[in-house]
Length: 271
Image 1 (spheres, rainbow, N blue to C red):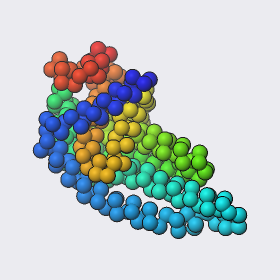
Image 2 (cartoon, rainbow, N blue to C red):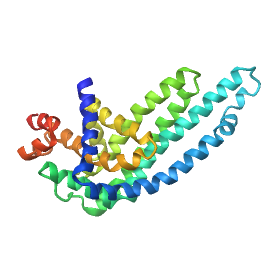
Image 3 (spheres, rainbow, N blue to C red):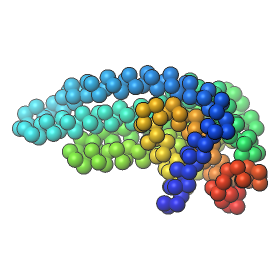
């Protein structure tokens, strides 16, 4: 399990390595990430500033409590609100950035596929079918993110324990949702629906979480998402190809692409 998790982290690292081979293309992918990121940073700053007032509003039951329990509870609620905001930002940031920068990220995905060899052709569902599926998948993932966010907010209300468990669970659930979102290009091109995507990645959960958690943590670094977003698309393409190859749903990669892709794709090719 640990080895698979580290393989997933390595896939994200290989996506970052794509900056070295295709810097111009990756720089284009950073533009929509920077634009959307500027809007989200403003929102996070406002949330941090007003979180104490929002925490007071969200915990009226603590008005009659004695100190220090009232302040402890409201401090925990304030931190939980900020944590919920960060989690939803990461989820929605990825979806919105992919939508805004779709032409750029599709080029990054296609370039990654071609580098690895045996890239898929145009999906059988066509443009409108792909668009409808993309919108439906985005709505499903948003509902999943909201549900997870509310659960983590409730966990964060528990003093001490919540402040430890909340960020850890946030990284795990956040990484999972990010992996589902970012593999969309590769899976949709193979006409694999979201339900099947979740099943295939679920069978390789440790590797998927390794990739997703690595991306999630880098996204939390100031300006990290700008650099990591195009890299995450490239890394997610490798993750999806590995899942497809192991499931026997996509041709094995060519010897040339095995040399380029490294040990992880060699393992996939032998599967």
